[in-house]
Structures are given as C-alpha cells and as structure tokens.
Length: 219
Image (cartoon, rainbow, N blue to C red; front, top):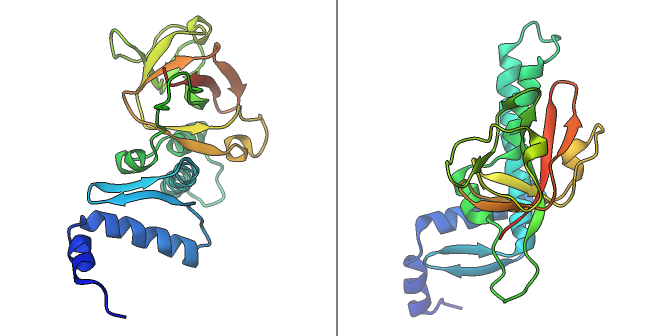
C-alpha cells in the first residue's frame, strides 16, 4: 500500500538525528540483542524515551565509556601481561560512571510533574577520598567549585550541583567483583543538576581507591 503523501511530508520534517537514533536502536536490538524498552514519543523536536528505556540507554553508554577507556589504558602498558596501575583502574571506573552530553539529553531523569509524587532517587559515585578528594563530582551551590570538606561533613539534606553527567544506579554497590555492574542504571543526572543527599556518603575501599557513593534525590 502506498504511503499517505501527507505522512511522508511530515516525516521529512524530522531532524536527521532522530532517524540516526532510531536506526542505532534498531541495530542494537537485532544485531546486538539489546533492548531499549518502549519509546514514549517521537516528534519533530526529538525522541522521548520511557524511564525504563532511559536506564537501558545509560547502562549501554556506561559500559561503552568504560570499555573505550580500558582499551586506551591497556595500550599504554607494556608488556601486555603488566597489571593495570591503580591510576588506570580509577580512570576506567570514572569513565563508567559518567556519560556524554548527547546520552544525558536522551536519558535524563525527569522530575515528577504530579504534586507530592515520590521524588526520583538513586545512588551516584561522588569521587574518591583519602585525606583529600580525587575527582570530586559534587560542588556547593554557592561556589560551583568541587567540594573540599571531608565526606563525613556532607550531611543528610544538604544540596549540591553535579560536576558531570552522572549515572544513577538503583542501589549501593556491593564491594565484590561485580561492584557497580550488579546495580541497575536508572538514567542520568546531567552536569549542573541540583541534588539533595539522603544521608552521608558511604565509603567503599576498592584497594586502588576509596570510592564514595551517595544516595541522592532530585529536589
């Protein structure tokens, strides 16, 4: 059956990037066996995904970032049998906790529009700390500069800005071989998002770094 002429004209109005996204999702589904859940809306302004799909997109981007950085770190070390340095492991880990601006646009956690609805919550990595911060990912609202106070001074109810496009996970990772990979991705809180700490951050000693995780909610 021939396509309706008006429908074709409407499709031509859509940005090329939307078709690129859809083609990538189709390729991921059938070639790689990746499911992205249902699309909530397609319009000339872009593609809107359901919350489930946002988590799946974030998880894929997180794994890809970590894998790409791991490959680059392996290239730097020779012979091939050398063990990755603590710095290399920390760099690979950080790459898996943040995503690109493009992914953040697709998978941003949205604030509920219904009054008194439960706020979006989850866990994010906020940096490494041993006597001082390394790669801090939070900033006080007033300064916008990375936090400098010890983790125990980041109290429940305090609010900060995120310094990266942070992957939000559904629970605190266990200190085991799977670590954060065992926790489901919920989506992304983009760089500059205001978040509120539910409780003081939790330290997880990974030998190569003491990494702090915080349970946050979107105010």
